Amino acid sequence: MSFLSAYIPIGVPTFHLESAQKEFESSAALLRALDENVAVPQEMLLSLDKLRAFLAGIKPDLAIVQNITFANAAYMSEVLHSFDCPVLLWTLREPVIDGGRLRLNSLTGAYSAANILRACGRRFAYVFGAPQEEATRAQLAAVIAAAKVKKDISALRLLQIGHTPEGFGFGRALDSEMLSAFGVRLTSIEARELIDRAKGYGDSEIAEYLAKAGQSIRGLDATPEKNRLDFARLFKAYDTYVKENGIGAVSSRCWPDFFTSFGTPVCAVLAMLGDSGVPAACEADSYGALSMFIGQTLTGKPTFFGDPVSLDEGENTVTLWHCGTAACSLARADTGAACGVHCNRKIGPTLDFGCKAEPKVTIFRIGREPDGSFRFFICSGEALDKPKQFTGTSIVIQTKAPAREVVEASVKNGWEPHFVVAMDDIAPALKALAEMYGIPVEEY
Image (cartoon, rainbow, N blue to C red; front, side, top):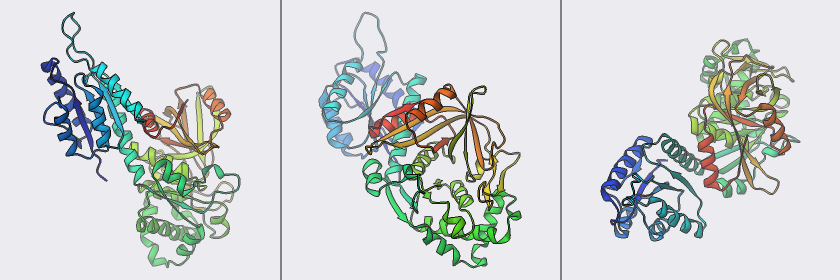
């Protein structure tokens, strides 16, 4: 779906219009640089009639309301009456303080706008600063990115394959809960449906899937033939279902079914889906899958999904690991996406590598509280250049905060044991997204 933001510069003509015009032109140029799909009026909206005329011609996904000068609450009231989308309120810095005329009085206008927003029960993002300031640019970029991903989430169809294993209920989601909280449509099927599909494919039908996987997974040809062919059958079953049903993210049951009922793990299938742009979480963790989707949408890169398993105070690092699934593109160049066997079941193919270094990463998780409400876990850091730490896939994160404090606090605060690592610093956008949903943030 196309995304549209709208720049809405409100004010009155009784202030210093030469100063206001300069801010209008600079602000419009900044917003066009941040988002090519931004609706910009031809002139400042210095009357309610001009505001109404501009609003009537657009249907934005984000309303960026800027007090180009002071404007009373009637202006924001018109915006709220016209749109039910996220709002960003932008206050300009007073351009000159010389003992003379007040040029813009943008800040007083912001108080009027914020007061009516609160009175109407509307959450909003807030930015204070001139368009020339880097901090202003960064804040605007974060809010625009958050609004874009919020729209993508509202169009998401998430596939939940099978049930969470015993003791892993933290990842289980209800369709009504996903829809009401995030606008996500949750589709649920049993694992046996895809297993049965996979069993029905002949060798010729899976040749392209086997070839595709062979280009990404190093050493796949060393896997016993039956397991290699059954993996390709399962890959085709998952990929076909995803494409036929418009699925944007997957949470899949893995153990014990795919070992006991099929004889081949699903780990590598989920990895291949991740590289194809469909984030896929194992152990049927649907909120993990949604977290992966958000991370991948904000960065344009696959995310890592795993458990915190090791703490090193000397290096100030936390290692996240999983038993055999991670997008192949995350692998270190020296090993590539090496093929292996499951650490417990000794059956392959699974993935077996350490992730490559990334200068900026964000550990993220949508957490579900016992009362059904949600919270965001956010922790910034750097992925170090480390080989695999254990059999399976791993990533070593040097956290900005003291790693021991991150671990101790997050355990005490009862966080789920699955986390996502997004390959960039997306903390500002995540905090803006949380604000749009009214979800509290726990930043570590």
